Image (cartoon, rainbow, N blue to C red; front, side, top):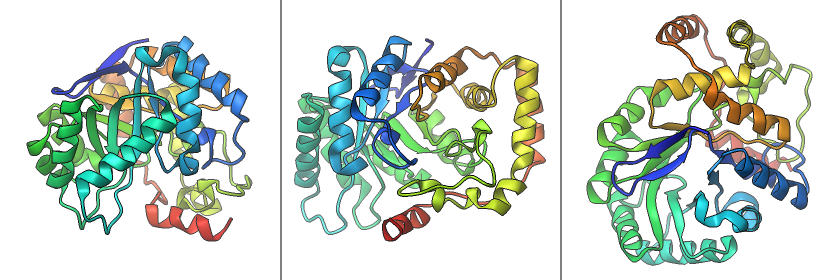
Amino acid sequence: MKMRTLGRQNALTVSAVGMGCMGFSHGYGPAPDRSEAIRLIRAAFDRGCTFFDTAESYAAGENERLVGEAIRPFRGQIVLATKLHIPEDAQDVEATIRAHLEASLQRLGTDCVDLYYQHRVNKQIPVEAVAEAMGKLIAEGKIRGWGQSQATEDEVRRAHAVTPITAIQSEYSMMERMFERDVIPACGELGIGFVAFSPMGAGFLSGRYGRGDVYTGDDVRRVITRFTGENMDANRPLIDMLDAFAAEKGATKAQIALAWMLKKADYIVPIPGMRKLERIDENLGAAEIELSDGDMRRLEDALAQITIHGNRTDEDIAKLKHMI
């Protein structure tokens, strides 16, 4: 497995493709049972994955417990990331962060989180206050690096000026490229890694989903507008384009989508969800797909001709709680 470095200060070395672990607990329909999830996480490590991502909010902490158990045999050989939500009414930012971190450490069964993200940036809480608290935790050895999720360029720059950020984690894929305008270039300038969640467009880019598929329970595709029947049809040209490139490269559509991202910048690391052994092999194998500069020009030219219909928003996903 090829490796990449996240961050210039408080740097972390990770596999070029990491594993997003949320789907082992919720978010994409029925999850595998606990023993199977642990087996799959360990299988990813055996195949070279050294970067595992979870959050306190995934299944109300159960995902952290699951990941903590799964990685226990090789904890010292991997980079473990988790995330916290700071309540809007938090009076003491540092004390709040410390309390959330201690709870996560207990669930994960470890004494240090390698990469600790603020899951979403609170508009009522200064990013400088969060950055200052994170700096103290780094100095104490409670965390090794920190980051933000879905942050704006301004929020990144202001926080980084207080305590250097290791990585920003935000949505990024061929279907969602808004951060290419400002945040990703700023990360390159400042020496910050960029970790891409939902790099497969919630699975759409794999080409395995169609208009007639039905999503139930807490599956986020119930509310992501890219998965309405009309938008599935309208976005078909993207799948057709990936099909053509995949055939040319002897790869899969998913591998081309991930290889495109890896070629964009050496500080970008995707963390797709992988709940089957064949998906682990496929997604980790994307790191071995070599795209030339010419390939990238052709991909970019093709993407420029395609309009993406629908999106993924936190507001839409919040609707799920009233539908379950």
